[in-house]
Length: 193
Image (cartoon, rainbow, N blue to C red; front, side, top):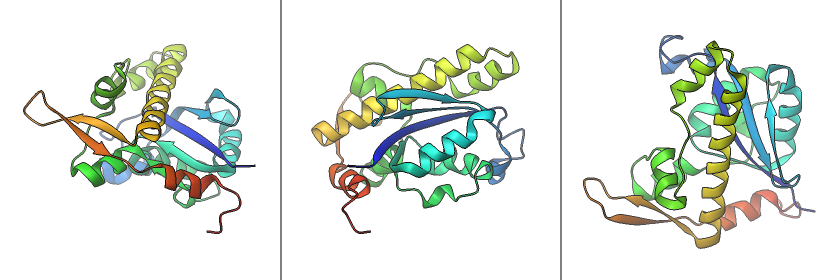
């Protein structure tokens, strides 16, 4: 049986400004994490009390997929687990696009360009929702980011590319993404690493 693929996104209770800049990413505190498990075919939400279950899900996954997870989500989560999140097999869609296109692109623009649906809020809204104790809206926002990331991942796997807008014009550029081999290597239990 193949290992699970898990798509994840997290939100935080505070900002880089609150912790003295991006160099202090480990001082950010997670408010909620949402993950989609392909094996279970379901979205799951994790609050602070649920972190042991999130840890088990991540450690059991053959591949962890996300958007900017190497720069943000996993470094924030690191302090909550006894294992090193950077040791997980992972696929960061932002880094895959950046490696081919030579530049970064936001999740909202990437999603609206490729699947016609974007983010429901700005990332700073997540902190506002946390401070207002609007946990339902916070969870909904994070879940939407996971759904959008999952849909982009599925599309890139299916067609082998994603489109990004060319800077300064309405033209679209095809960004080839060869994800199938990486996914197969990470999730096939018969593969020797």
